[in-house]
Length: 461
Image (cartoon, rainbow, N blue to C red; front, side, top):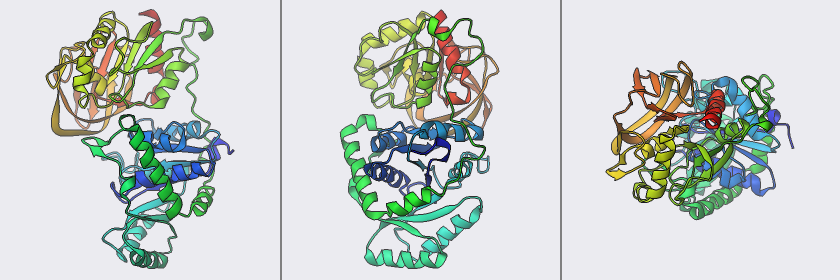
């Protein structure tokens, strides 16, 4: 196995969303894994759903690489952390290859991450409704930024042998190798709804079948030997990035961690709460917590001895009736929050803590109501902690991401969680007793102190 900073790697990019990046990337992960390789799966950007499919394909935790949320300086270390001990890494891009944070140039784009990782790019092109024009399209993407090395193209949604022949002729004149040709295949499709693909946790059996079909399609239609050889041309990650570690922080530790109590931190999971970065659990554990997952759809009690609660993102609006019907757990969550115990809630967690969601009773921790909306709220946010909370001291800066079709009224409590600097100045979220609730999804690796502060509050509350 290769060292993590020089592990062979590919970035799977596309000219635009909808070209088939997820299908191709997941299929390649599954096909390489079927060859007996240890495959490290990664996703550019803040998306929580695609990494679930990556995990099914590889048997490893899918991890995100987000140069906006975590900063460009952490992309290499986080990659090295995830890829440690693997034979090959496949990184699925986001949107179009050069699309990044709005108004921030290349920041957080697939191209930016590819350069940070010094990784060759494979461009997935939706070839439907074009033939010779594909050469002009690919030429533009190859030549736009000389620092981005496009090593080949995978043609997706090719209609026939004759269509493939025309596409290959065009690309041969452009000097870009064709590393795969995929026909249209219904069995690799995955269902979508208002926020994208349906998460793996909601359709595990069907998802396994879809991932197997993706792997078979990639193995049949792609030159895996050539792709693996291309991956091996990746040089060391610039700067020789040492793997990121969630290890204990060296300051503010009056006694050794082993001599201190390990508070139970309950983390919401199950189909309604599927959005979570793996590093959050790792940071909580490194800070000394005993992390226990529970399912608010099924469990009527919090895990025994719970001293803190983390409720991440997901789809409570889809499961509002079931969540509301679990009255014993709603009561337990309310009592825990009332006791002053630390509670960290993001997006779906915020909705769950409200008084009601679409008219159905929720936990009632926050004097606010939530409802579905036709309007999509989407984008990166630059935020600062307005006051002290169980997560952060006043003035702590973090970057976050919003992605929802719901509205909470009011949008902020008497003590807001964040002051959002961009794209417009406003306050957002709620801080009351130990509760920190907000629409913003944050990546704690960018500010590991928040996890340590949270666990310390769990010990002392």
